[in-house]
Length: 467
Image 1 (spheres, rainbow, N blue to C red):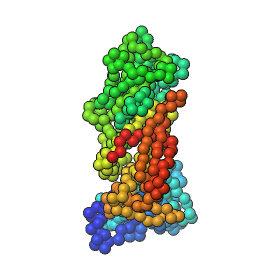
Image 2 (image 1 turned 60 degrees about the horizontal axis):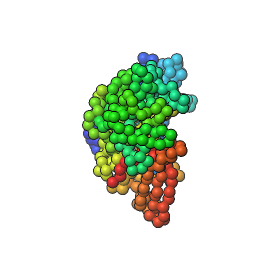
Image 3 (image 1 turned 135 degrees about the vertical axis):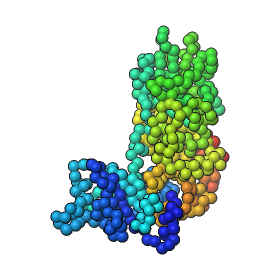
Image 4 (image 1 turned 90 degrees about the horizontal axis):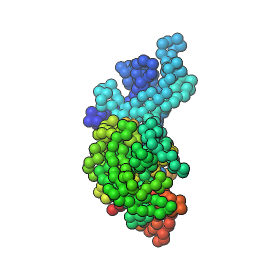
């Protein structure tokens, strides 16, 4: 994140910023401001001098896609003459009756000669924990990444919303989390039996026709092909003759269903799979379905991961924890190279976290790297040889790419070494009839070794098109 004009002018004029830490205490206490000597006289809600700080570094490790929060340790002097009001004031707050864990905290570079709007944010997050050291207190400030540990799947199938759930041996629909679909899923040149399993949600009777669940939301296109699977054999069903597609509201949620017509050759013991495409960026089902894999992940995070979209217009990105500038740049990169993807979130009884879903997406797209900004936003970068390299050695010689504060850098370079390059990659879905599930295979040719390596992989988020 670039410096503000005021902060940059302050530095160019020879100004020396000092460290400030503001903590929004619980229990009706005023905001606690802790700072160095240069700030204490004019900016002290509670007197407390910062003795030492371990400043966080925004960066990306090209060898791993793991997403770690930023963290800074601030050592605050917490002593005054015994008996004075400020003696151990910080300890009294932290050890008082009101819990102060996870209160908002912001670490900045500032100065009395600068308006606060121009102070530079080093880390905006929460007070995670603290340690008393006999006259000083170590305060650990970290990114608030709580939302990543919440459920990626929001809405399970419940009898209160789906009163005619099937009662068929071997069929479980209740408690499955409603899935959401992105991108194109087409099996005609592979298994030709439908890539996407539909969920049997309404058993036919005198009062009900059979329903199979397609996706949350209203895709702009109907499924291209619907298959009935009976005794391991697939049959292509007729749109209009055997079924219709319904876009409706159930339990307050916009959903898309396969509705079977009376007399269609479909049994309660049959399973249904389909090929088709996912959502567009318009809540009314118009537009073009999203193919850009970066856009798909951003859109899912804003509306289904962090957000609680049910129906109508999709949610505002401004209310999300996404750092929109970096994502827009990476989306443009994916568009430039014609990257297309597809994935499905949900459709199982297992509750998974948002971080799990991000990590699975990264298994398919390892060239992208998420990271936290100092402002506490989730950003995205791409490892690309066309951008300048900013590197410094960390730990035991591992290469670590740091993001320079004064550069709008959302991409980083990678060493030009044949051992780190791949000449050719080919991937294909494989359908296991006995296991009734899709696998994936990948052949990789290493130009430094002139040989192929074949590996079986999970392609949870599929590469639909590359280049």
